[in-house]
Amino acid sequence: MSAKRILVVDDEAGVRELYREELSDAGYAVETAASAREALQSLKGSAPDLVTVDIKMPEEDGISLLREIKERWPRLPVVICTAYPVYRQEFGAWASDAYVVKSADLGELKTTLRAILGA
Image 1 (cartoon, rainbow, N blue to C red):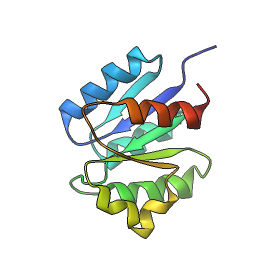
Image 2 (tube, rainbow, N blue to C red):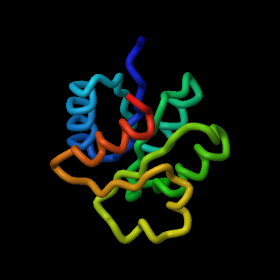
Image 3 (cartoon, rainbow, N blue to C red):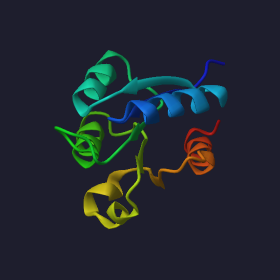
Image 4 (spheres, rainbow, N blue to C red):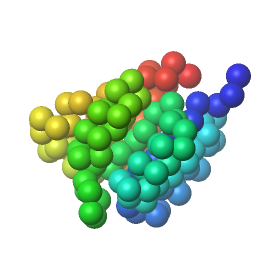
């Protein structure tokens, strides 16, 4: 069985690299995108099994990207990963499959991914 594919969308290079390392070690195939535009280009090629999206990004924010993903790929799970717990109450965030507050410990994220992907 091939590894589940995850697309990590975050404008911070350090976060993308941390997620790539940690999630690869957990057995996932990880791709990254630095912007909403880059993420949409990647998704047009071949959709992963799940997308993680940061909210605060230049150009297009994560809530807008989430909306666009759900319009084009309604069955694709999207997990919001942000440093801002306050956005959990924002109506636009409700379309996500999960909401995880960023932390140096990726335990909550990994548990969430396993629950959604069943792996």
